[in-house]
Image (cartoon, rainbow, N blue to C red):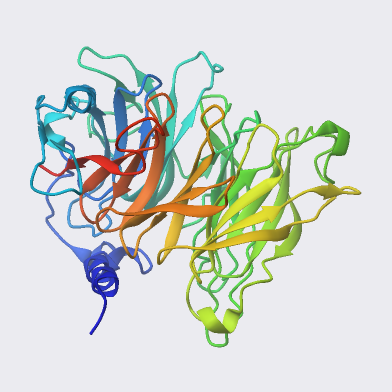
Length: 468
């Protein structure tokens, strides 16, 4: 007899089978005469990002099963959630759940949606990345990716009567204008964004770039590409370079899968700068390979807006024979983006969190695995929470089991493994309130987890935003 965990993972995989249209090369044959996109509720929520004060949550509705015409992005007002958590009472669409220990507060998403703020996008809409084009005190800008059709889409967040509105030049047809939907480089029709963009990652080291790995290489040219977005183009973010064939294909006979997943920009120490950084004047990047057990390093030449491929670092603890035809690596991030050398890498198969020492010796990174922790099945997304002198935390969502693993980075151990809902996916953190928001994509919900050591609900799911 299967264990509860095996049964739960199997159920989530069965649920995931409903989105098979999005797991094969894109086809619009998955449906005809479809309903319009859901913009007043949660539907396959994927990307999540917060406003500065934490009151508003931006969410992409993925439409991964293509059962509606498109996906979209909506804005949730979290004030009722804040009030309900503060006094443990009902507010707006938020109510106390007394019949289960899974969540304390449950909020219906429809009651939180900011009116007229939703925008229609394509399908298979992914993560949300925050940018500040005018500096840290300037207005917020958001970027996302969609895979059907492939594009990077960006929005400026502007003030509205009922809350933030998203400006992407929406026309009479209800769609964002061509400036805000990046598919080609300006005045260069031959330079196109590759199919299947995995995620968009905004550089966190002060360089005005965003990076878009290609999740799957194209047929006939299996090695996948990495795209470079200039965040300060003439009219906004624009595609400026595509480095081709940068991700290796898988090591198995009979298949040629190739693709990237995450990108992390390394902090640079001028006293011990890595080769390729030109004394910390160029960003040096680490990229995870989805179908090969290694990391790729890159640099960017800012004046030329060109990606410069670097060396490859093998992840030596993986035996490819044990993970045939399954993805290897997923998200990655530096533990301390202000100056640390330890890189956290999510290993999807076998499920683990890796700690990689990227210390520079004679201009070259060591890139040695110095820690490995087993995790729940099919981990993908990663977020790091740092608060004062408290132990830093790494949060890893596990899609297959609908769980969130919370790792103490000082003690290097799994502190908690929370059962959330089906398909735990993207994560964003409210640093002031010390809450993590986790999108449960096929379950049409978002979990709220407390990271506050002084709170009674520390490392538990304290609330849930649900469909309806």
